Length: 145
Image (tube, rainbow, N blue to C red; front, side, top):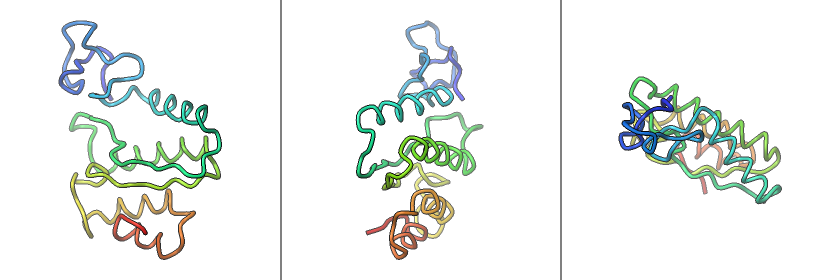
């Protein structure tokens, strides 16, 4: 979603005046990561460091900084599904415990019933190891105990 020639000082939304301000092959933390490269690298390094963890705590806000034309509910869903797929491939039997952030719903900062579709999708992707009541809470409220 970003250009390799973009400026990291404005979340890669404009052309960089010099090579020092470009994101590089794995993206830049101010920009959306290079297509798939950073996610693949991060999951590979996780597997190298701990091939069989007891669980994975997934912090929220895994959707990158993107231009408005690439933002929206479908973009957030695609991002969630890409992360879930990568984690499932590398850690097939490891429970992933998601923590939702303020940029995991659309519009951003949405909570309660308005965020229901995002909560339901997260429960679908990661709720398989939860007890039925926990999965229902995750799907309807965005949290579980």
